[in-house]
Amino acid sequence: MISISPKDFSFIAEENLHAIFGIFARCRIKINLMQNSAISFSVCIDNDPKITQSAIKSLEHNFNVRYNQNLELITIRNYNQETIDKVVHGRKIMLEQKSRLTAQIIVSVE
Image (cartoon, rainbow, N blue to C red; front, side):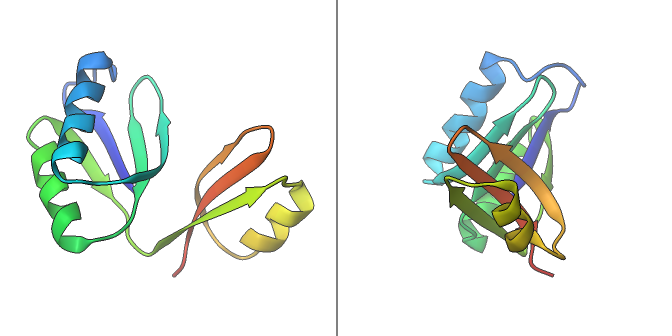
């Protein structure tokens, strides 16, 4: 999971997203999950250390970047809270995103 925020504490605006997606495209990074707020942008990607580090170095020129390893993305279709509780029991939830039919949860595997 990579979390990105502007260095000047401004908002994540369209030009920021354009630059971020441009770096991901150049590095051929596939995004499995993304979450955007006014002040940060987080993505879950497959871990290829060489490609990931290249993208992080590029992002660090203009953004503050935090990177977490040893995470697992869990996707549950047609979820209910009981199922989520069973799957994440005893694990630290790093990010959670739910729609009407699908829950995606990033958990620590440590």
